[in-house]
Length: 191
Image (cartoon, rainbow, N blue to C red; front, side):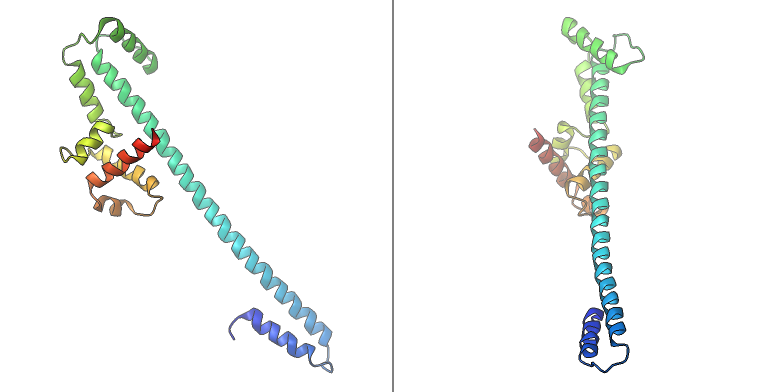
């Protein structure tokens, strides 16, 4: 019998059965107190484990939110670079958002007058740190590999999507096409 509660309960039963035992009531009170402490310790352990799980869940939620924030920032940066490549003749200021809006207005009124603007915009999309649909499809088709920044971002996103079930090395062992498919499938489901 290795369970301390069971041992104490058995001892308590023996003491209860011995009415002539000196200080019997005191012994029973002490055993009851120890049993109560053991019960509280068990509850405390369960509570501690629940709190640890809550912290882990919160960390995963934070990581997912950070990844989403990075994703949006990357998309915005790629859009700004693509617009700059498509309309390089538009004067720039200190606010990238205002610059982008001026470039959109210029393209809407003048069209893409700059030679090679479409190719420059496509190159900006293909080299963006956060891989877009065109990059993912090219990687799946075996036409290209991720850049270092794209691979790092893709692995971080894959960790979130798989619920941190695999390490970065385990994800990388699956191959870049598998990673690209995972990300592309997630993007399609998000639409």
